[in-house]
Length: 113
Image (tube, rainbow, N blue to C red; front, side):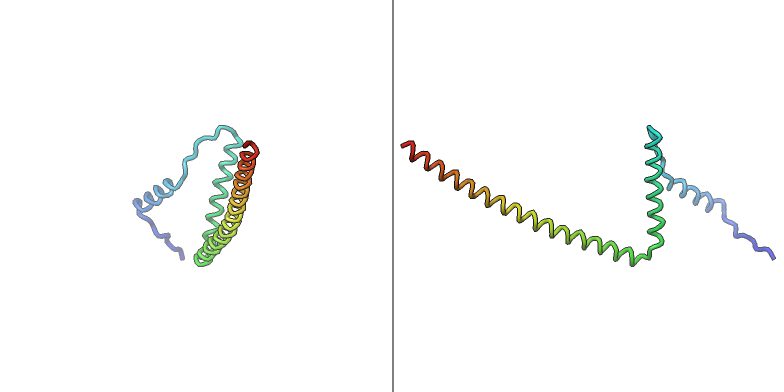
């Protein structure tokens, strides 16, 4: 018993081919063989990433993105706190330095008189 492969219409096949051709990225010719190699490796890595991503269920991808965002927010809070502390200490140094300069100027003026 033989089974007949479902035939596609020529229009549907042509449309699929056009879609695939549009997906192909036209790459400028690299100036050196090393650049060509690196470009090919970048494209291969990108495609590999897409393949792996397609294997991961959508809810897992969503939770992973949310976990990443929360981790970034935690680092943002930590760094902003450190920056605020540094700015506060710089301001204290400026104030004491300015006060000390004012005192020295006053002393010099009194000595000159």
